[in-house]
Amino acid sequence: MRTKAVILLFLSVTLTRAESLNFYLNKWQARLGLSSWSVTITEGRPDEAQWVDRLGHSKWDADTKNAEISVNPDQSELEKERTVVHELLHVLFLKRGSEEEIEKVTWALVPGVDEKK
Image 1 (cartoon, rainbow, N blue to C red):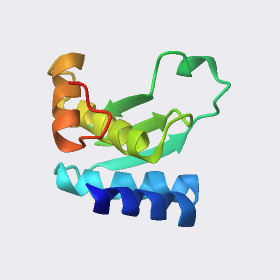
Image 2: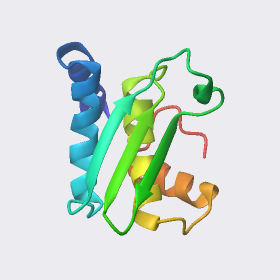
Image 3: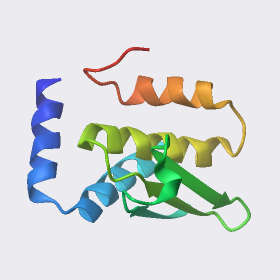
Image 4: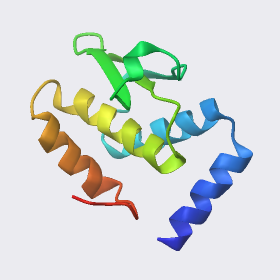
């Protein structure tokens, strides 16, 4: 766990916000077998209304294998990585699986020191 914390600290210091999101996207897109998808990722503005009680958002088109992910900027690096994984799982499962089931898988893949589940 200490190694992951050091890596996350390194990322937060050396990479821009967009670079860290793309790092997480590339890492998890490959691990989840979504390499054939074209996925774009953006960080929203914290003042946007869509971020009230929401950490991320995704939309996709299964026919064209295109997806867009937006991430709430008001999160730690670990939370951003977890949000990227969560939204990629929505793409992977294509409306199958409940929000609760996807969240369980997300926590299994990206556990954290604040884990309560």
